[in-house]
Image (cartoon, rainbow, N blue to C red; front, side, top):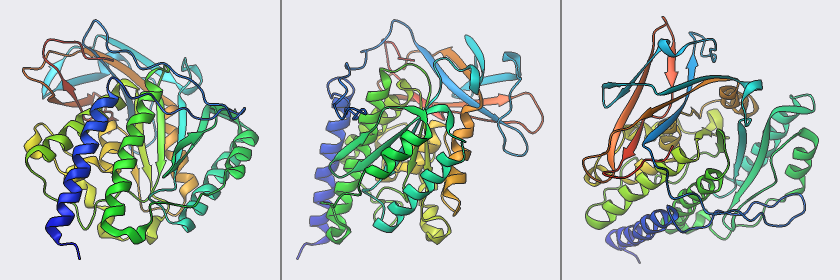
Length: 373
């Protein structure tokens, strides 16, 4: 029988591998190749190593008092704070959904690794319901990615709802090799696979221009028995490296991440809030814990939404995608970090009563080298 210390050793070993894998993705790991309609892999180049400036680009949703995206604002309506210090906005663009060029890409991730068979069926039904509401033609290109324990594959982006529904229905729910009956060890495997897949998806999208909204439909990734499973030493450094790697990958790819929970009101209320203990950005390895890699945490920090208590999954998907209807693209020139992986908290204020801006909550600056957009 395994002891608790033995289980912890397995967890820490997995985290070492996790940190190494994600760090390698920054430069060497090829992106996954989603299948096109021909069934042939799409070959993509590796993402660029960097640019010659420190420009940071932010996609900003501004919400009115009813939580609806608000357009029509000007640059002078915004104040950007970097670590609580005002920062000059170097470029500004207001975008309405129909005018985005290239158009915002919507990626719906069907999580078949962390979701029960019954809830996967619900996910698929609700995606089809959402697609059917469009009247045949979608305002933005949509792709559906099926995340299984064998990897992640998806069809090419399309505005054609019939083609997307056909792809959805012809893709069967596979048998699983990582089962919940494996308990703790299976949970470690699912966490590692989930975080690595998100990193690979970000690398895949980094070579494509424009903004992307990734709606990950899943109850959550494993958080084990609670919000905190303490780690220390080198494993803790590896967790921190993983946090930095995923944050940078999402920012470079201009991905806003969303989490929709298919279990809705049936999920346990207390477990739905575990992630909230980890929303603050991690500025040092000694602060890093497994909870900092939670799906909901990464979604919130990217400027996205966590919708985990509604039974209207199709409506929740639509609420996430409404961020593409009207938003603002701001950029600023970030200062060099005084050391590697220096965390900077971001905040944007709008000079209009009752308006709330939602964007990335922070970024990691590096000393003496460029930050990619």
